[in-house]
Length: 117
Ligand code: HEC
Image (spheres, rainbow, N blue to C red):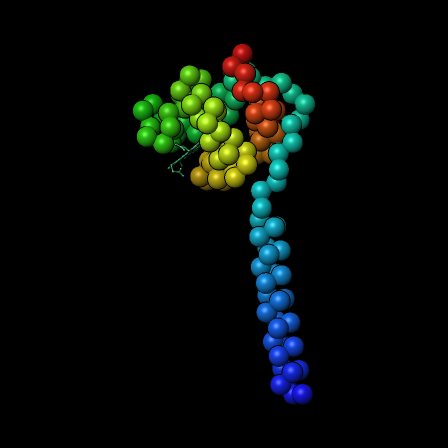
């Protein structure tokens, strides 16, 4: 009987730890961007966001991806890596996700098929 109580207590502690760990992960999870209703294009919106937040690493000839023009960025739009890394995983830029306002605009850009103009 004593053994059973110990087992139940032990199991409860483990379950509690697991639950806490899971909750923590949820708290840290990226917020899902929601299109703010705007109709951004590369030229009027996305370029400025990329120039300000990405070009330091993704400059001319970068092996990680050269994002200095629409035509160079296009590969990453078409193969979905831009959307995946910036909007979904939010592990780009490496220093931390973009602001919610920028992410919401990029979400519209994704939904509209990345128009250039
Ligand atoms: C501090 C440097 C840094 C900044 C700033 C940065 N990146 Fe990156 N990025 C990297 C590195 C390093 C890699 C390659 C390693 C990896 O995939 O994680 C990479 C990879 C990527 C990839 C995957 C490329 C591939 O071939 O699969 C995409 C897409 C990307 N970055 C998008 C962006 C965008 C968009 C921004 C700006 C919003 C950005 N990154 C800002 C350093 C950076």
